[in-house]
Length: 89
Picture 1 (cartoon, helix red, strand yellow):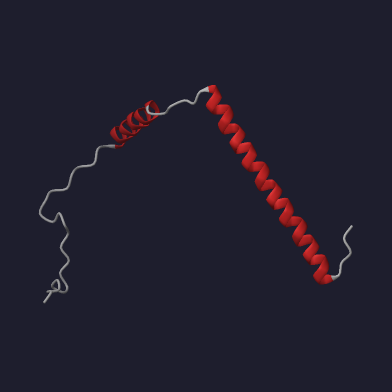
Picture 2 (cartoon, rainbow, N blue to C red):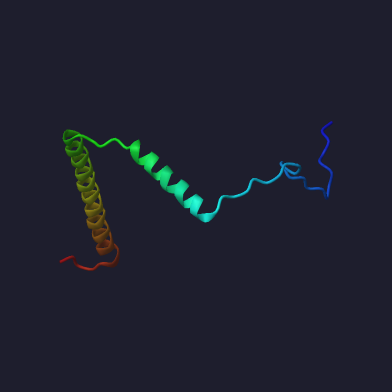
């Protein structure tokens, strides 16, 4: 049989441990800036060939999405004209 926790008693996980003191605002800002620079050192700049390839993929995707939206727009215009009997121009 599983025993339930005693009711009315909430015990924190670190109830007996002292709280760690937060560094002051300037120390936190300095830590943040150090972490930003550490992350920026991990960034790998793409080569020219990779950059052109990625740009082509993005532009191709945008063109495909534009064609899909244009096709849906034409379909809904046609559908609306069929339902409401409005002549298309």
